[in-house]
Image (cartoon, rainbow, N blue to C red; front, top):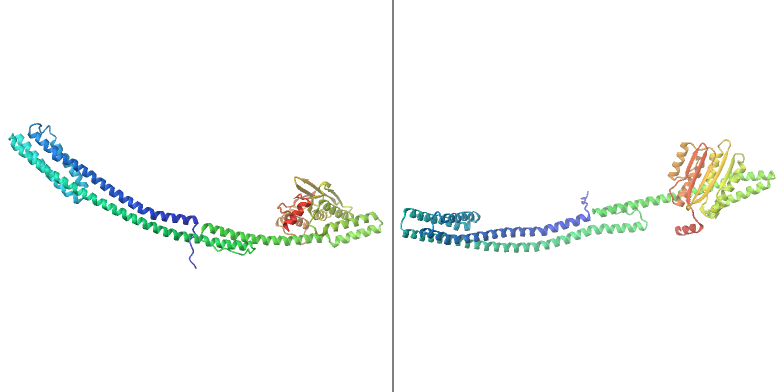
Length: 488
């Protein structure tokens, strides 16, 4: 088996590319910032230490010798003088700076700290001499020693400052080198990022372009009627979903075409069976027999009426091949049928037709009412003891034509009604007229197909009889011609 590619969306691929580029560009910047902050901190601390040491030089070379001279000359006493406080300040500062200084510069501070101990010893000797009331000349000599030691400490501090300056200079040089290195690295990374970006963009474009090209080819084949065209799967999420939908659409179109062809075949069967029902030889024989009987009985007017009704019945049934006829013709058709049947079933059948003449100019699909009337006669009136009445009504309301055929014959049981409704919902014509409901199922299917509507015949049945009704859009001759020209 081949290796399955991991599915990834276009947005995810773009997001991954941007994250990689940002990571590659940001890392050197962060490193350079950290280095600059590190060296800047060290440089700042070095400057602070040099400034502190520079301030100490003044204390060591001026303030401490001056305080010692003032004590020796009698201007101040040890209790009034701050000489020990100055010495302690210098010692504490040197100790603090020594902890912060690296090994290279620390030696000068250590020597300076030890020398400060010598200076403090000379100050102690001055105190001892004053307490022993030795001559001032001897203390003056000690003060000179103090000045000499202070000068030595000053030179140590100066040496420390020089070393710190050199160290700061080296840090500055290191910083410039690191900035140069990071700048070069940033340029190289930018070049690499551009190469990665170009490669990734080409790969992404290829992964999108190829599926789109396959989609275009498949769509062209589908447009040409080749519904067996299938699109290969892709690992791009958005295009994968589109691929699945196009394949699904092709399958559905294929199934719809199959269903459409099947519906067309069913419609032709229904029309054929309906036409065959109209020219049922038994119906024709019985009608002709009735005409003969009337003629033999000398009932001239009845013969004329039956012959005229039979002529109208077959002429309208055929309608020169037309599918749509005026409602007036449909009304005349069922009148002819009922007249003929009333001749045969005079004792058990009555009928009423209530279709206003003002709607007679509108057009209706032919042979919608006669099968319902026939069903009412053969499955309602004829099998009920005592017979009954068939009522046909029609009206126009809000642009729709409403028709109903009601009989007072033997109604259907709930099981029969359920079975009939189920057959109509399935849209399958009956194969046998004797199975019952043949006319209803075929009329229902023809209304669905010709009027493109989903409403079924409404059937109500009980002990008092059965009522079948339906509703269709009202159409004029011009609308029928326009629709036929468009469909043609």
